[in-house]
Picture 1 (tube, rainbow, N blue to C red):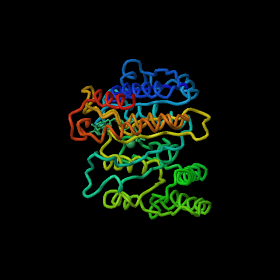
Picture 2 (picture 1 turned 90 degrees about the vertical axis):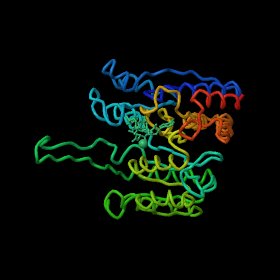
Picture 3 (picture 1 turned 135 degrees about the vertical axis):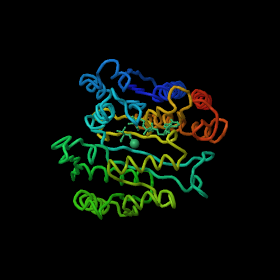
Picture 4 (picture 1 turned 180 degrees about the vertical axis):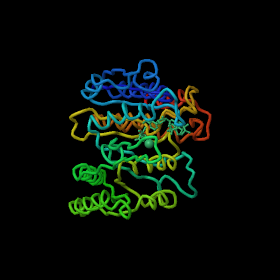
Length: 355
Ligand code: NAD
Ligand code: IPM
Ligand code: MN
């Protein structure tokens, strides 16, 4: 297997090395082999070289079997030397779009022993999979300014919604439910206001669901969904939603599953014609970077998702189980979970469990 590795910035540089240790431990145990290619791209690399993601590198990335990605980006309050959003767009969004990783699969589940900010809620109550459309919507960078820097300035940011793009995301959600025996698929959108784009979503959903009569369906407006994710998360099983809403509700999902350090994701091109990319949901976390504080569990779950995708299901299951066992013991909790364990200590614990 050919795996491209891009740690990126901030805590990405701390959690990815631990992810590679876990990958190595799994390979030793399950007897598979792989090669890695390292890529240096990120905000820091841009500041040194002026380069974000060269076309030649993108071509190389596409030809790998998978990409293991950390996080890119500078401080969210801005960095005067980096145009706003340049790094995220040129690197992360370019990979998602150009490699046609049209599904962003974000499992959201609370594990035993992991603290959640919700009251009276346990692991049985939070177990959902959010299918985020990943190549359309408000993320297309379709827009512009008119009369910039005048009192008449106009800014347009156009939400791109195609029948093809919406239907393949919805169908993926139903197929996922069918294969993994999930009972319900909920569409989350905003049909009451976005009466064109989300009307298309609703019509596509109504049509595709007819092909899956055994699967229950539901619809919520996104504002209500954020409330239900907090007040009754148990109602969600599989959610399918737009790129922007998926971004927002998966950070909320991360919060209720114990924080950003617990949330994994796969940017998947189900056709397998180009590489899929696996990454923790979190960003470069400049507030805690460089301290060996970051929780690497989200990265380990992302490594497991990657191995599942690469037909190494036993290794994936073993990593998932090792992570579950490790987080069940508070002595392995990093600061975000209320503990004092370091990033490397959690890596040690998961590798030891795997061995
Ligand atoms: P963030 O996810 O980096 O951090 C949000 C909060 O979660 C912070 O308090 C941080 O300390 C905490 N956190 C994140 N990861 C953690 C971990 N592994 N363990 C413990 N705590 C963790 O989001 P942000 O601060 O809004 O963004 C920082 C930068 O990262 C920005 O430049 C943003 O654009 C970028 N970003 C990149 C990605 C990505 O590359 N996939 C994702 C999100 C944000
Ligand atoms: C995520 C991130 C990205 C997104 C940013 C960094 C472009 O927040 O992966 O959730 O908005 O998709
Ligand atoms: Mn996000």
